[in-house]
Length: 378
Image (cartoon, rainbow, N blue to C red; front, side):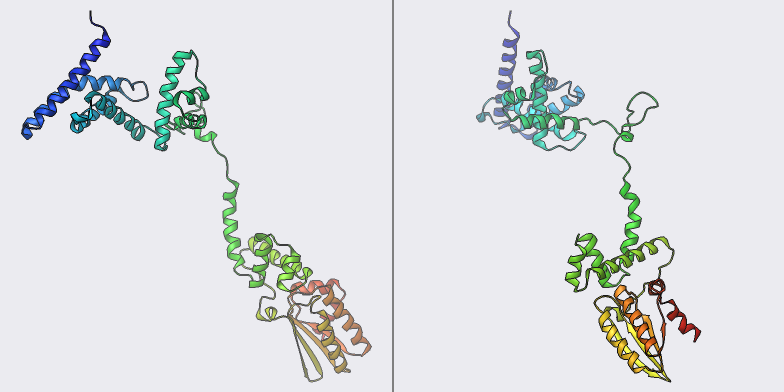
């Protein structure tokens, strides 16, 4: 009685002989004749294509779909077969297997995975099933790597990518009925989303600040520069930088919390040009107009100018106009206190006028409120 192996060998020999006969007869047949010969060989080889398809069943694809793909590969093998290159069955096995693997690679993966990983994943899966039967346990990554002659890292990558073949839906239930969906268990609230509006608002408000203040804020909070480094680059004192930063941040905070834009004190061109002092005399009144910030860097110049004004205003009234002063520090307050004492000695009626709100608060707590009120009483 003939064995199964012998029968299979005879079938393959018959297919090889039939393919050679087809190639020989098709070379001299008409177009219609070649079509008939092609159909006859295809019908003869269909069982062979079915056996090839059944090798890949159980991998998530319907057997009917695999048979269709195998038959497509069979037709390609028949059309491209050249008897001078060897056995038809060997060529058909390679062509049909490649077509089935291409189907798995291009049509069945739920997530895009590189082709080399897809092919290796299929090989790892097949080798794992064979080795599980041989070892009576699941093979390790190292054992699969030796079997397939690849690195262990490549095997682990293939095993991890296998999850992309048939991914679970985020809308699937995590447990029984009434439980949360998988999507509800992934991720969390992004707190940065709540800051988007604030960041856009601040970005718009920064454009309304003077160029120097914008530059200082950028250097401090984006460039991570220290106040001393900022002062050295801008050519001002570190205390001056601290005051300007505080004023800018206070203005931004107030602008964020109010419906309208608050008034920016001292954003005009006079401030940008540095401190300037001008003196006018009219009708027994000497008016000293100060423009710019009064701090440690400019206090001495102001002291000199006001000293000359006190001397020239003997017996007259001296008015110091501070409407152009957006900022004054302890050095500037000391100058005004010294000028107040000098005016009292010289019998000069002194008054401070036009103080901006920030400057008025500083002078008020420094004991100069009576000089600001003196102008009102006049």
